[in-house]
Length: 101
Image: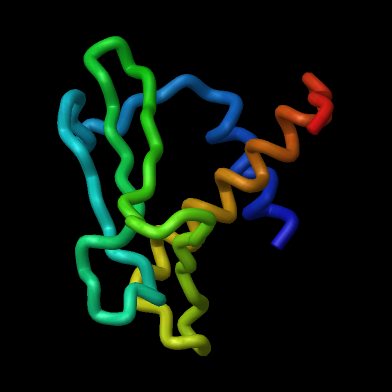
């Protein structure tokens, strides 16, 4: 597992642009606890200047999007893994640039 973490850190610290990802296009996925409302989920949009925008499309306030493990019935395991990487990136940024909550 340590090798995977080292590989993730290498990716996080290397500027890149995946060729399969287009600017000015939104990428949307329905979350696992949508209760049948497939319009609820997570949206990522990349602007022309390379900025990344993340938003949810849940109509109720203070509701989270959950992406479950395979054992928990998850349907979006790659997205869950990517979110784990995002959490790791946030943790590393917090070490380098501490913020008060």
